[in-house]
Image (cartoon, rainbow, N blue to C red; front, side, top):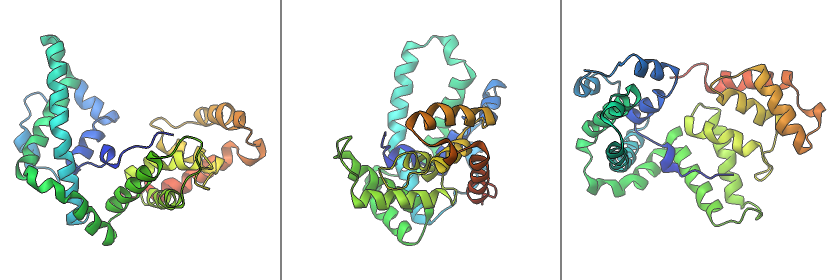
Length: 252
């Protein structure tokens, strides 16, 4: 199991919009050269305010600005190896555009403020912010598991963090949702449930289908000695509907 750093997934409201542009809608924008001639300053002015506790929103922005410098460096390195024609590709133009947007948003985030991230996340988590609680839970899980060998049992703290992430996933937190399948497909955290894991795989899939689930059940679950009577398509789809209704059907 790959334990993902909390920093890897937690981003400002802008960066979540950048991630959304990886969806089908974002790809259509890129294919239609949507970003050609678009002014990033005007885009920023029309962005909706990010949701969440003020301390969480600020901490997210700081995290995104930390990552921005690395991404700019990566893009510049890639640009040196690209031809002029490559730089005109819609997907490249899309990335360049959003990097410019993020530069604008990071103008009011001085580097000396970034050590405040942990303090702000703790404040927001204590206030009940789901994103901040997810950040702290992922941080705890990564910390507990990073020192373990693959066959070492999980610590009690890791089990507590995994259980909290599963609960947060049901609220629709996107980072917690990204962990839901991984922590239910193994008994490492005493949360193993073949129907639950298959349901999360269905909910998280960009192209859910009965065929996908049938292949998963026969190819992955049953090959791992899961009894056919314990998991079938109808159970998976019923549970996936419950999960979707809770986490995703109505988003604030």
